[in-house]
Length: 141
Image 1: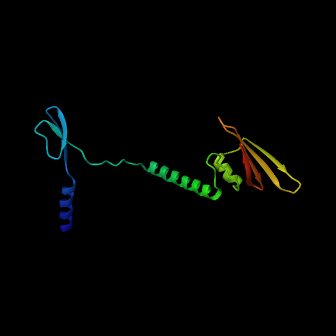
Image 2: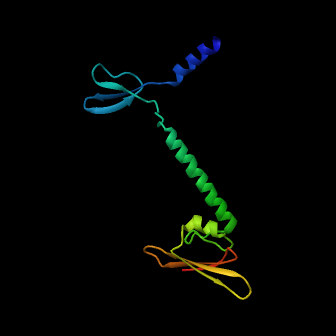
Image 3: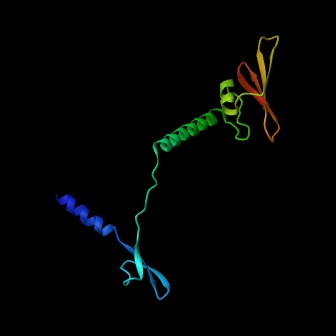
């Protein structure tokens, strides 16, 4: 019971009122009431935006996606301008750049399977990503 009264006492001390007054054509802000008919009390409480459950879920998904991008970036030293780095798997390249516009595959005498994935970017040059054994060996713009 004593705690309740202490909280009530402190809450009154913290919640100061403010007033906006128009006196002789000049606007002023003050802590005491304006003369009769020359101003109003203003709301000084900070209102927090209401965040819907859907927005919270979207923010969480975005945060997880950014953590995954950072993880991949650290793992492969991805260059931001290309989205691909040497050592990435085909699945990681597909996740980064999407489905390639064309795939050129070849098998060499040593038994190694090599692929060239072609990405034709709008307003940019064509990007070629080269794989050997399912791992990025190089790329070209």
